[in-house]
Image (cartoon, rainbow, N blue to C red; front, side):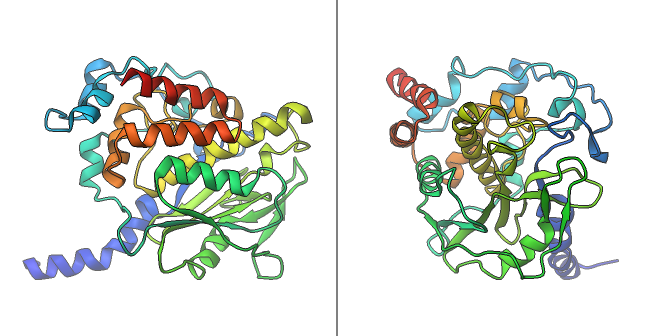
Length: 338
């Protein structure tokens, strides 16, 4: 029998293990399929019977909103601009991954990280040379979307640092082991960082049994690493160069903003088409919107209490500046509605 003090001490000792098992190693955008259509991902071989939540379930996920300021209450209560999640097709994320969803109440109960006076910066750390996507534009989108100052650090090449690599048998592209990169990033975390995000043009893999991942993160250590390799023109399956370059930037912004949502403690959204939807292949990634649904918007409000009237015009202006016109129009329409 363990006394109250013993329970507290046990919880303290177990917390790192819990983080590790539950959220410390979050395989973001874990893809089951190569661009060629083959699959080696052992976690995506079972078909899941997913039923989209109905209107009542979506409302419960948003939670009680009567005590909110009128502007936010209206933003959460009017879901006419948001498309409910559909029945997944074969090979989609929700057809191959059992996702319980995360209501706003469950989000609060998880006691997620959030910025404070001491840790309020987002840092992007390039791990190799970048021509496209432009890191300054990615940083601008990050800063506008989350309202946290975002800075691009100096290049830190990883060659010669003992990071494990392999050659992928189908694509013949070099891949870097994400767990090695995360261990390295932990030693580079600035004191005032809310999170440090390594970005690379090299393909990633989290374990020998996996094809690849777009990224992986340690929520406890506030570090993550993300790859844009499979978005670049010339990568097998990326598409024609003239089309792929513009599409690459949009996909890169989605990846960074999606993964940063996880750094704020948000789990994959199963209620609406939303930035925080899981994605199993590039077609599914392209269908993901660059905005939060009402459920995830409320979660983001806890991390950053800026109202939509402040946040949305800033996002719209930045998205227009970097060429994300369609996405800018969505935020502008929401501002006009308000």
